Length: 281
Image 1 (cartoon, helix red, strand yellow):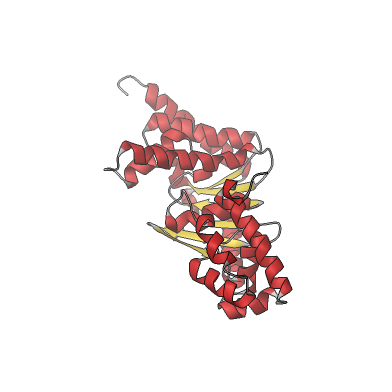
Image 2 (cartoon, rainbow, N blue to C red):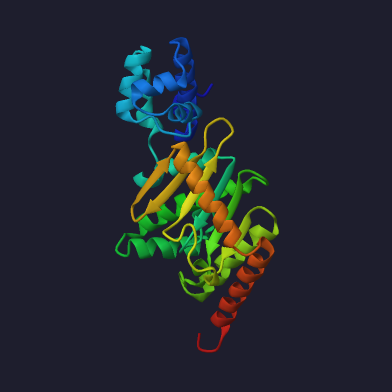
């Protein structure tokens, strides 16, 4: 029988989360009471138990002390915290993998879950123009692995709101853009994702300061994720998450309908395709 050593980090976190719940209930402590001793919220404890949040090294030490688990969490959390993704995005990627619903706004780039290899490559080369080919290849492989979340016919629900700038920014040139936008349009036509576009004519809007991601789970409170250059923050504070949800709802209200958005994405993709095949292109 396969043991814990055969588990990937995400599955290992779920196993450890279940053990945390059992140990907490044996204590006995509520999530809120344990959170007080860890200086985090009760919802944070719930997310660790569900495997949607990492148990960080210093917290693992405290858990072993409080729950008298004989070093279990210290021993097991190191492997569980390994990630293929950049440190600032690792927790968000891990939460994304177990979310049942993802709602995302992107201001400049096609969301990672909707990217094609050529587009992802152009993005990574722009971020790291001097990186060895092996590094770029590894980044691309990890990005494409994330997109397999959409291989399931219905889960997770992905609702993406894109600024019109995402369509107009020529990442990789016209041929890459034509293929990339056609891919997004194809996913929308298959009703695998819902996509809306906030047109330039909307002017200022509720998330004009940058991208936003909201994630919902079956057995844990929702999270939001905000990202900037080489940094990101996964947020569980209910008030902040609710404010981000309002911002997202306001964005959807400003956006074109899914039908009109699909028409615009398809039209821009065709323009890029014609440009790529034009004489002298």
